Image 1 (cartoon, rainbow, N blue to C red):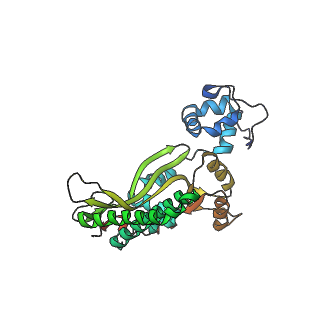
Image 2 (cartoon, rainbow, N blue to C red):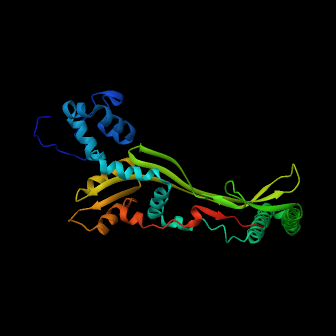
Image 3 (cartoon, rainbow, N blue to C red):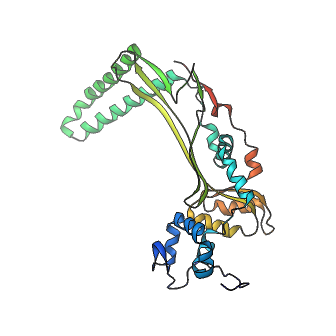
Length: 305
C-alpha cells in the first residue's frame, strides 16, 4: 500500500476475492466472518504483512471487525472487569432482570414443598387419564386409577414429612450464611472477537433430605439463572458507530461499553436504539458505575425449615 493512499473500506468482498495465504488459502474472504479467533490471531501476528502485502484482506477485516482499539484507555476499561464488583455492576446494567435473582430470605419452604407435591399429583392424574381414555373399553378404570395415583403421591408426601427435612442448597454456607450466592466465572479477554467474556449465574435447590443414612434425597423445587456476557469496549464512540455495530454483528458480541459518546449526528439515546435493533445493548460507563449491587448478591442468610 502506497504511503498516503486512502484505504477504501467495503462491506462485501469484490467478486472472486480469495485469501492468498494461511489456514483458508484460496477460499473466499467471507469465510473470515466465521472465525473471529483466527482474525484476532492474524492481526496480532501479521499486522504489517497484511498492511503491506494483502491490503484487500485487511480492508475486509477492518470493514467487518473494526479498527483495533488497543490503547491505554481501552486497556484500563478492560481491566475494570478483573474485579467482581464491576463484573456484576455491568451485568446488572445490561440485564436489569438480574436484580430479582436472589430472593431466598423470604422463601416459604413449606409452601414450596406443598406446591411441588400438588404439581406431582396433577401430573400423575393427567397421565392416568390420558392412558385410559385412549382405550374406550378401559374408560371405566379412570376413576380408580386416578384415586390410586393420588394416594401414591400423598403417601410419598407423608413419608417425607415423617422422615425427611427440607434444606436449601446453593453453595457451602457457614452458620446459615452463604457468601457470594451470585457466581462469576469464565472470565476471558480477547475471546472470539470480544474484548471481555464471562458468565454470571445463581442457582438454588430445595431438597427433601432423608434423615436416615442411605435414604434417598429428592429435589422438590429449584431455580437456575445464567447470563453470558460478551463485551465490546470503546473508550470513545463517535459518529463512526455504524462501523462498530457492523463489527459487533460479525462476531456476535451482545454488549457495548462506552466511556464517552462524542457523536453529533445522533443522540446517545438514538444510538442505543440502533444497536438494540440487533439485540445489542449499549451502556455508558457512568451508568454502570451508578448501578447498586444488592447486598444479597454478596451475602445472604439462608431460610430454615
